Image (cartoon, rainbow, N blue to C red):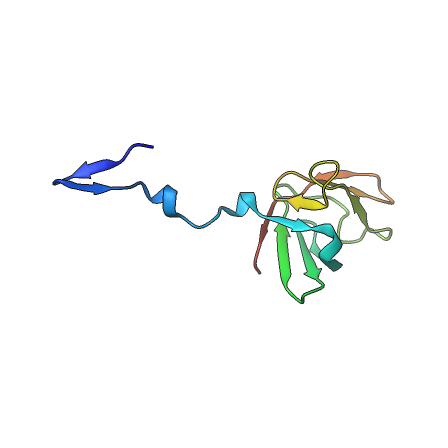
Length: 107
């Protein structure tokens, strides 16, 4: 990592001390109590500990809001129970459409 030296004072890049990026956020699927579909681009994940994670899909998932059969997802990597931002697809159970999840953020 390179540091910037300005007027004799060493300044470390801000990225080294920044908060975790939303793109790195993962939730454990065992901790999901239920989901709430807000519209074709937004899903709320209600956790067992009463926290809520909002996922905003990068592209509209046509039919998601009115999907009678819900959706199915697979963990980010086999052998884990984690769903990570921008790394999970969902399948609408009735329409059979495949859509990409986006970032998990706090609502």
